[in-house]
Image (cartoon, rainbow, N blue to C red; front, side, top):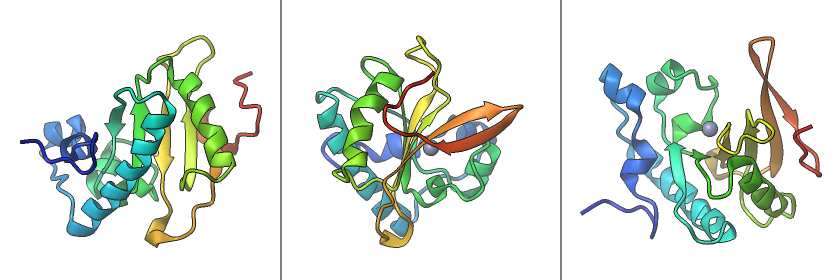
Length: 167
Ligand SMILES: [Zn+2]
């Protein structure tokens, strides 16, 4: 039987990493990381409801130190702690899904520290992904809505204001 952290999200989908598998790196959660993943999955259940109750694809959850750094994750990424999930291949498109979720963060109705629209492209529903991160150490979420874009080869994060237009 699959090990489920919440009704719809399994441990396996929150820890799998093709990079870790290829490189033979351990990505097994510690007890604390597993607890953090359960919190993330609780938020993902709410996101799933907002998006109509359809299955969500988690492209990355926990990325322990070497896995995160090797995959090019930010050095201080909360993925290292098991406090984040990336969502991809979302029903109706990644950017469109972001537009549905962001207002809940803006109204502080989802306990999300940072939601980041990562590398969306206009009219390319499969481009980019959504990063959802929770606050470290059980702290209060900041409800930040950000976008990430490549500027001259470097990733730049900026505050994304309503309306969350790609233009
Ligand atoms: Zn992420």
